[in-house]
Amino acid sequence: MTPPMKKLVLIGAGHAHAFVLEAFAKRPDPTIAITVVSDSALAAYSGSVPAWLAGECTLRETQIDVAALAQRAGARLITSPAVALDTSTRQVTLANGEVIPFDVASFNVGSTLMLPEQTLPEQPFSETYDEQRPYLLAMRPLSSLHHRWQALRENVEQLPQGSRQRVVSIGGGAAGCETLMSVLAQLRQQRPDISWQGALVSASTTLLPGAGRLPRWLTKRALHRAGITVLHGVRGQALIAGGVRTSEGELINADIVLWATGAVGHPWLADTQLPLDKHGFIRVGKSLDVVGQPGLFAAGDCAAFNPPLHASPLHSSSLPKAGVYAVRMGPLLADNLRAACHREPLATWQPPKRVLALIGTGDGHAIASRGQVGFSGRWVWEWKKRIDARFIARFNPPFER
Image (cartoon, rainbow, N blue to C red; front, side, top):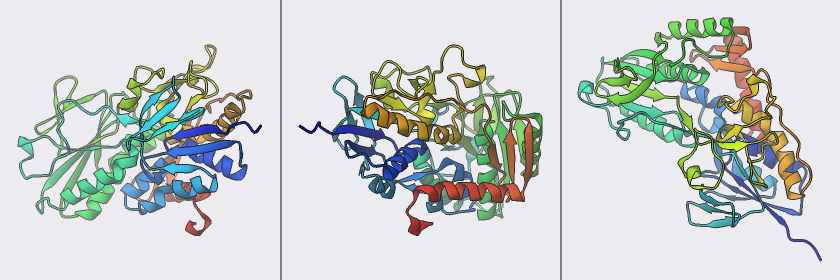
């Protein structure tokens, strides 16, 4: 008698799951039925988002065609996100009410942000900013950023000619720096009649914590050239009339606030039996398997990597929330999901000691950072665009290349 097919459910369509689908497309397994649940048939590649924000490419050029990739892998795609999970009955519930059973499941749903206190929903601009909170643009979740960005740009069109606008980014990591420079470049192009000023607010005492001195200097120089002031050792806490209130109770004047800090897990995960860390991320072991939950896995931003006790401090459970780690996890996750379906031993994942960061500066240039090494130039930007384009083309149908 033929044994029943194993049911593998991929929850989310992040970078790691793109590798999983690619692996099953290249090496199909007729004993495994794959279901992908995602809020969209298209998934943005985080590495290309700054280029899109800066107007260097279209939104579609940043997206992986999840529907086509799932079809190649023989997987069923359901465009409705997960909202609940029951580990005892092995079922995941979707926003559309559908309940999907699984034998093995994997999470690659990214992260969201802990938004500032006392904030209102995104609101239209007016000419009296001193009487209302600034406009908030949250940089995550990434899947819906294009809606928020479009709304901001439409509101920018309504601003009075010759006015002044101060754009403040909360978050001094690579993403915060790159996002602010990209956004300012596009807004200045869209409304050159407006005086645009920028400020970067970082709780750290340095830019790019963990990077070398040269990459930090190159980033500081790029921010200065973009007309951006940097405030170190300051933690933005709340949106109030006229700007951002810091944790010390001071006011940072702002008309538009880009919120790029405080990554947390999606709220619905807190209502599951999954083991979560203090930020709401799913705790996983050395094989990307969920701690204490056989047959469950997690990768990318939603995972809190929990290595063995004797691991290097560089490989703590607080890996940076960057797409490069999801990319590095992808191939091993694919192998381990296949192995879990067949009840075979799992392989272990070793985080890279150093990763290459390519930071766009919004002006057709980019900075390369890897450990203490750093360099910049227009050629770095072209190099970054080629790398990102190749990555996206890898997963898309040939006719889209």
